[in-house]
Image 1 (spheres, rainbow, N blue to C red):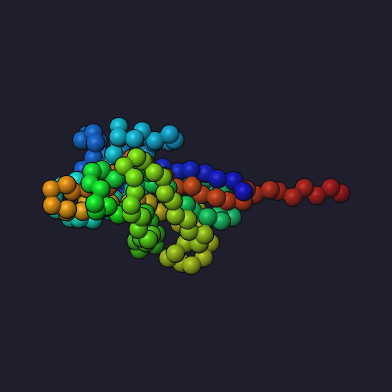
Image 2: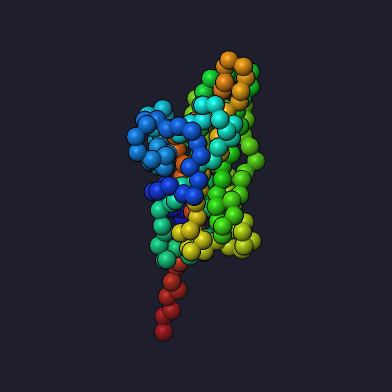
Length: 178
């Protein structure tokens, strides 16, 4: 099996998360770095009063038509909790495929140091069949972060990295000898 990592390269259909750091550029360019992630140098985060849960979706780099036999699509997100120890904000990974947004189960009790979590889809959840290049090239991936209102110390989620790893079986031509 071979793998290919693709990263955000533009804003997707939702940009709801309240804040980014630094406060210039776009949300997607705060989470697009290759490993190692850059920690607090660039983040999106949900610190302000308003929506307690907010989602960002990101467009992704395209893959080549030569990639066939896709066996898995795994979305990775690197995030941490900021502030508060009594109530922990939750984190979710999201994808949008075929016009529908799919949300993973939540992660909570996350540490204040950055942790990478992932969620894998062996098939396209919209069609129920194997992923194809067109699905991947139209895919959006992102995160939902939560802010917990805790009366003075309001913990919130922050994210520094999102990327997708495509697992595929490379085409191996058969050589026939006559």
